[in-house]
Amino acid sequence: MAGVKPSAQAKNVYELFAGKVFGVPDYQRNYAWGKKNWKDFWNDIKEGLSTNTEHYWGTITLKSTGKSIYCSEKDIPFNLFEVVDGQQRITTIYLFLLALANVGKPALRESFIKCGDIYRLELGGLNNQILKDLVDGRNPFPTIKTNRLLKECLEYFENQIRSFNKLDDLSKYLQNITFSLEFVVQDQTLAVKAFESLNDRGKPLTLLDKTKSYLMFVSLRYLSNKLNGEINSVFGNVFTNYDIIKEIGEQENIDYIKGNRFTEDELLRFFYHYFAHHSITNYNLPVGYDYDATANDVFEIFLKKSCEYLRNKPSELENFVKEFLEEIENFSSSFKGIIEKVEEDCKFRKLFGFLGLNTRVYPLIISLELRGWLDNSMMNIIEALDLRVYKVRGTDPRAKLYREVISQIKTNANPKDIKTGIISFINEFMPDPLFQHYLNQSIYDNHQLLHLFIQRTKKISAF
Image (cartoon, rainbow, N blue to C red; front, side, top):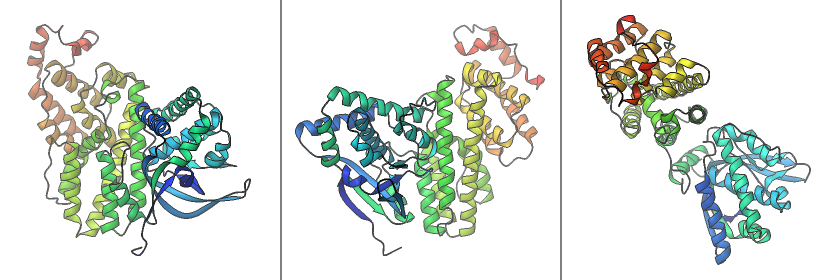
C-alpha cells in the first residue's frame, strides 16, 4: 500500500454525493449533534446565502471500499464509501436535504436521499433503522436519545425551511456554493491516521475515541493489522453501551449519569481500576497502579506506556491488547446490565435513584457485577459502605478501598476476600460506635440521611 496516495479535493455538496453511497460503520459513534449544532448549521447557510459567499463545512474523510451498488430502477451505479470522519456533518447535510425534499423540493429525494431501495446514507449502530424510517415517512417514535436527535434534527430543519420559504435559493446554495474537503483514502492505515488528525468542527474526540484510535495504530504498526476488526467491533459495542447507560440514566433520573459529569472518559477511568493492577502484574509493566488516576492518566501513562514497553514483544503486546479489548467490552456491558436493573429491580432503583450511589463506589459495583459476585449480601454491604462512609460521615476516603479491594477483584478468585475487604474499610472509617455517635447528633441538615427514616440501621455484624 506504500504507493497508494490519498486524494483530497474541494467539492460542493452536489459533487460530494455524486455517484456515491455513504456507509457509517457500526464501530463509529452514534449521531450526537444537538440543537446548538443544528442552529450553527442553519445560520451558516442563511449567512452565506444573504452575503452570496461560499461556505466550507470542513473535511469529510472517506475510505474507498472498491464495491459498487446498482440501482436498477434508475439504471445508476453507485460506489460505496465508508465514512472515516465527518459522519456527524454528513448526516446533518443529508437530513437537511431530506427536510428540503419533504417541505417542497421532492426532486432532491432521487438525487440525494434514496434511489429505488438504495439509501444514499446508511448509518450504523443504533441509528440504522431510524434514519430509514425517517426517509420513508414512517413517523417513528424513538426512545433512545441518539435516535430522537435524528428525528428532532429533521423536524428542526423542516420548521426553519418553512419559515424561510426561499426553497429554490436554499437548494441551489447548499448544492453548489457550500463545500467540503473530500479526503479519500484507500487503506485502513491511512484511515486511522486521517481520523487522528482531521477531526475538525465536530464533537471533540474523547479519550475513549483516542484509545480506540491509538490501539488501531498499535495494531497497524506492531501487529500486522491482526486486531483491526476486533478493535472496531469492540469499540462499536462500548460506544453503544455508553449511549444506552446514558439514556436509561436520564429516564430513571439518576443524577450522576444523566448529568455532564458522566462521560465516556469516566467509563475509561472506571475500567482502569478493574483492569490495571492485573495487567501490571501479569505483563510486568513499568507503571504503577494509581488509585487517583484521571482519564488522561489512564490513556497517556497506563495505556500508551504499556504498549510502548511491549512493542518489542509482539506476542505479549497482542495478548495485552486483546485482553484490554475483551475486558473493556465486558466492563461496559456489565455497567449497562446494572443500569438496566434500575428499571426493574427496586433494590437497584433505591441504590442508584433514591440514595444516589456515590461515584467513588461505581468501579466497585461494576467490577463485582462483571465477576458475577453482586448478590443480595454484597448489595447490602455496598449500600452500607455508601451510606456510612460517603453520606453519613461525608468524607472521601478511597485509597485503601481502591488499592486493596477494587483493583484486586479481577485477580482474586475468592469473593469472600473482597467482601471482607469492604467490611474492613467500613469498620475503619465508620464502625458501629462512631455510626451511632453520628446518628445521635442532628441529622436534619444532611438530606442524604432520608434513607434512615425508612429503613432500620444495618450493622456490619449482620453481614
